[in-house]
Length: 338
Image (cartoon, rainbow, N blue to C red):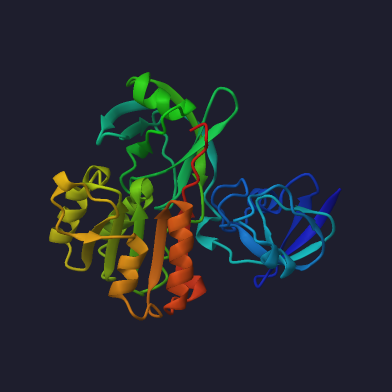
């Protein structure tokens, strides 16, 4: 059985089979609604049920609180329709015409950039390219049917190789393979592009980027895209890490600052080591932004990293004037089997 779903405020309509989630059917019908993890953990796909009934599915309690549920909110990545629905959510129109592909690729180069971060450079088959928006991600498809999501760290114009920044999760099925067994020329399969975390280019507002760890990867793609487009928007990157060795590409961001007058780089260490001899900013990365910007009402913020960092930033930035529709996020939810 299928139900009709109407999206507000656009009034777009589509058919949703009862066995598919609201998100699955929307994406299948070509409507790009926001999402992140797709497993009920991050909250990026949260929207409101204006009319109708849903099966909320399984999700993590911190992604959809009981008070939000009572107010009509649902996670579209886990909720399935029980009746015709009218839902309210922001649509991501720029991604609608980009096809999602399943493709093989070859590991052209492996670059261990720090003690726990490997950069994979993936080459597509001859005459193939992946169309994507800066900030989107791909799913690596494993042989057991599972998948691992990684942001594309290269900008769309620099698409000879797809670049992934992979942090080692000790004991993780895929990351152990990358760090301990994988060799160059290995063949992988992936699906993509996915995600609603990409640069909104219809705005001239100044941008604050907040990255935690390898959350730098999609932000790197966004920044390189804006530099390529000769954007004049004022941009500042706050990149948080535990200690200096976890800040795995500071030289690149420092070079951007030297090359582009409209870009500023501010690294923030939460737990610098004595041997780091760190003279820069310390503490939580979102707090550094709050300390520097008393009024965020005229800005856009793009945040990528641990869910706790993203959630803390969203709440605090809103209290400091950031409009709800000016906050874009991709919380990295690590699989226990990564």
